[in-house]
Length: 163
Image 1 (spheres, rainbow, N blue to C red):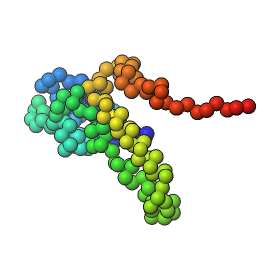
Image 2: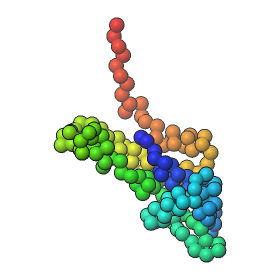
Image 3: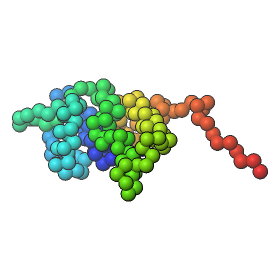
Image 4: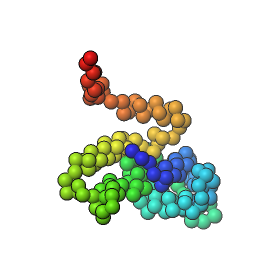
């Protein structure tokens, strides 16, 4: 899975807000500075996230942005859906070669694989909340390994070569 810059920066902006205590907010400039992105880019991302109901925009001198609901109620699948350019839907058009559409658009085994992989990734992202990403990389990694460790019986190994 390839994570777009928009998805990466959008998640990072949301994590900045997830670290806040109740009643606190961050200005657009503060978020942009903390994440090392332009104010314009942060503004675009927060506009999308606000429009989707993931963040609240507060007006006034003490205004800024904060999460619209607790981080424990915001799933990564929801965030990615807002920030994603829906590459799965446009996959066949992206690989059309010199034609307008792919020659296999009507019947394609590759598309089935792409769609199924997308569904697996979406299911995994649904199982992770924004709150679970708050913390050190080591702690988050350990927690994710506990959640998504595949059962040994579900993982098939390639057969060994016989000599």
